[in-house]
Amino acid sequence: MGSNTARRRGLAATGITLLLAVAACSTPEPAAAPASSTEPPALAESTSVPELPSGSMPAPAPSENPPTGKPGNQPRPPAGPAAPSPIAETRGLFVDSESNAARWVRANKGDGRAHLINERIAAQPMARWIGGEGDIRSWLGSYVQAAAREDQLPVVVPYNIPNRDCGNHSAGGAGSVDKYRQWVETVADAIGKTPALVVLEPDALIHLSCLDPTGKQDRLRMLAEAVATLSQRAPNAWTYLDGGDGRYNPPGTLAQRLIDAGVSGARGFAVNVSNFNTTAEAISYGRLVQAAIAARGGGKHGFVIDVSRNGNGSNGEWCNPPGRKIGQSPSVDGSSPQVPDALLWIKQPGASDGDCGTGKGTDSGAFVPELAMSLLNGL
Image (cartoon, rainbow, N blue to C red):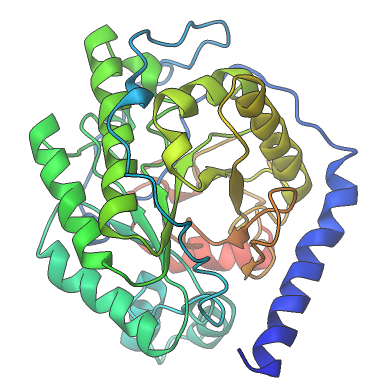
């Protein structure tokens, strides 16, 4: 890699490292969990999702015993040489010119807000969410190949687990275990040998509590098989299972669920996805989950943090809350498990959490310029 690349990586690593001392002073305290918000698949972002009555979302119980049967012991990729780091193999994160924000800017050039939204949001590297609709192999393949042509790193969020989001704002998902398995194979084949970061199924583990015992077993097995499939068919990608949120999900509970979901075959886990906790809080929580996994014999794993909307921290609300702000610019590191692999914009700023809060009347995942401006101004 050239000197410019080395300098860019050095600056990114320094920025992440400086947060670690702050994180040591702000360990989050778990509390009862509300539903977390997640973004719907890119090809279904305008689908209207009915809102559940208040209080109808079950919360993960801190004392819940993990399901037995060890779904995490499902078939794993055959042992072989360690895959190269996709961070080391690329020159920074990929800016998606087809993000919802970028498309809104192109369609609204005369809007007085367009320049700021373009500069502060659309021009930043953000994740691409993938649902179950459309020709996934073609358009996901086009996305990762566009990143490869720039020698940059795409971030992919597969989001199609059956009974997704417990029927809340982002309800949906594959119709059966078999259909989900086939869909994951298509996603993995579309990524192929391209370096990528994959954040697998946000909320899938924190929402185990809304499933019956068979549903829990099926979900853990699907996730473990998805990790194995991605490892085999997308060997240059790092996969992260969703590890929840430090304010609402006890580290020990999530650690066991991650083990049962096959984290041993993944790079690690993601925290704060679509949430608002400060980066220091997220680092503290990530380290607690790391330690809890290791204490259970699950090994040492890296993690990534969603910093897209955490500039003002959390006010305790989860669905389009007021007064939030975009976080720091995305960056990558990957040098050590003690340092987050990356600070990412997984949730796209300006994308609605659903028909709620300051986004009342909007569809989950739809880009809403008013929400984007609120995040830019911290209002």
